[in-house]
Image 1 (cartoon, rainbow, N blue to C red):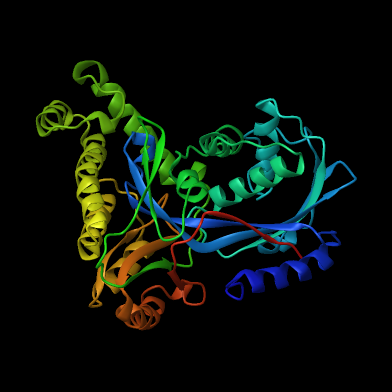
Image 2 (spheres, rainbow, N blue to C red; image 1 turned 30 degrees about the horizontal axis):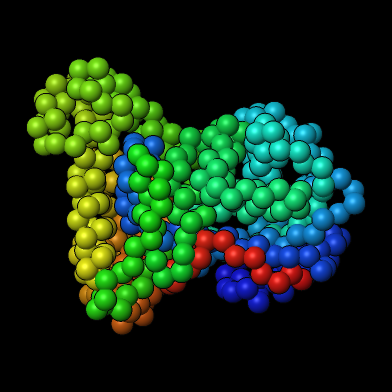
Length: 412
């Protein structure tokens, strides 16, 4: 979907798709939801850490209009062969069933399931056509889709929810309770609350959002997503699920003796060393997971101070250190992701690089001096197809802006 680069091209393609699908969206609205770029802590949400990131301009666009049929009818330009997905509210396949395992429609079914379970009356149907250009892994395509579908369903049914964290919680529930994906809240928070030109800081203990400006005098830089061309299956089918279970096991093992409920509760060097000494021989892998979270939390506060001071080079170096930890301690990266990182690391002006998101496959990311973006493209275009020929016609380099997470646009 490289031809979809902005609102105008998305609208043009959606109009074409609506004609193909014979869905009436003329005179309706269009909602755009962003992707996200996590600066810290990747995999920290389900471990209890604070979070920081930005919304980025790779989107899902969804044009919609209420219908008089009492049915939800959806057509995706990213999955044209699936045809029109049609169902009545309340008549969806069972959660986590084989019927939803391999269809993108599980997210639409899940939104209906979660909203109805929460007690909302969904009486109106709608027609919708959507298209997206978010890479398939690392920038939170599923969270963007869930938020878009949820806000659209609520609006069509005249339901207003002013508590943004409730939207986040219910969007997470679509993935956890219906799809069976064990994701945390990082993706939903970084998309729903994203604000153009700002970093989003989430404190889990207070469930609060703060916007943080980049310090004055920061070097001109770009956020670059490096799509490897690989497509990661849902988190429920990836190493993410295994890593989450490992972290929960480590917290359980150390909980009673060391007074922790999650890995983020390990705050001091003394406490960390005591836990490692206690479990290293019997549980070396679990100790590695703790080591990453413990070090990443320390780096997080350094990164936040660097961001506020406008020291983007320091932010980049911490981003790079996180990548090493994700690769060696958390062991959540993948060969194609590390190939991308190895390539761009050689380019002067690349401040930091690492894998993004759930892991295994998808996209890596880099923080790059503005005048080095061309060199990054050239390096990737030269080296990646030779290193990974199976993906020579599938990879992409996305140079991203920091944008609002949710925006309603004129319809089609």
